[in-house]
Length: 471
Image (cartoon, rainbow, N blue to C red; front, side):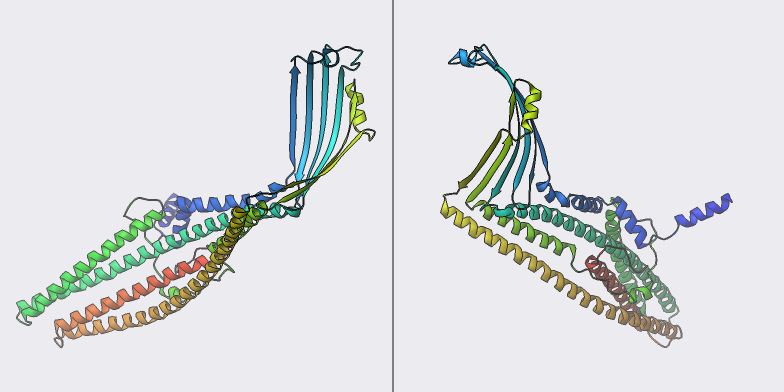
């Protein structure tokens, strides 16, 4: 049993690293991706901040006064006054721009040193509940500024969330491209090694024939030159593999140009059958542009309201209780025996008219610019989708053709090498066919790489950044 478990563990450890497994590593280790996802989640939770503008607010006030300054008439005013006040209020702003506040105040006053003849109640308590209402009739007329501020706060959070979500998609697409790049770089190295091995065997074969005087020395020189060329091409492929390995590790937050993982082999049939991902109604960067448009529009609306004159309608009603005892003052304050009514209008207007008119024109331009930026983002998304889908279809066509060409070149090379072994062709012809086969194989790898790279970019248009690929 232990041996079986050990065998299973070794098998699992030696399993090739597929795309989904690699993207899981990237999701766990890549701080850029992790930060983008955390930011998107955080901004989503903060998207209701606009409602805080309308949230009820509780306020309180507690203060004491001990006033011993000289008075003009101590008989009436005494020589010392002690005052204590306790107040609690609840206020709320409504979408109509109406502000309501309900408060209750209890205050005690103790005048010392006054004559009882002139001030029979030197110590008394006052209690007062008050309902206050204010309504703007022009600036922030019926809540225009309030609603604009709400839209601005909500759109700011939405825009930041969409930007972070798109950054996460882009990071995943870059990681997927890095995986494909390394896998195909390794395949290119394999093809170059096989070509070098064939060139070496051709060189040895030609060398023996020259020693036996069955071939001209020119054939040997040609074989030697081809061998050196294959070594150069292999070195270039190894350099590209090293760069791809570094990008592969960088996606996993590793500072190394060596990748010990074995990558899963490509299924050429799956690559050929890749389809366009299902497109979302709008990509996140376009949604972020739309949110910025809303932010700029709401900001401009708020600023235009600020530049307007204002007529403020206000009023309050309060009940009053006053007595030498706190209890009586409290009970009297809850009756309508001693009401206080206040109503009024307040008018304010900025007077720097030239600056106001310039500011209004500027805000209108800001709104127009935001709209143009959003419409440009919509246009760019549409054109990018069309360009990528067209490029994807063209790449698949080239991939099919390159695969057929590679098969034909391989068959042609095998046949020509057989003819060369029977002395029916020249080394030059074999080397030419070898080069043509190598070019065809590398062209197929490039076409494969192009398909997978474009497909990874197309996924950024999908509703979710789900992983997928030719594995």
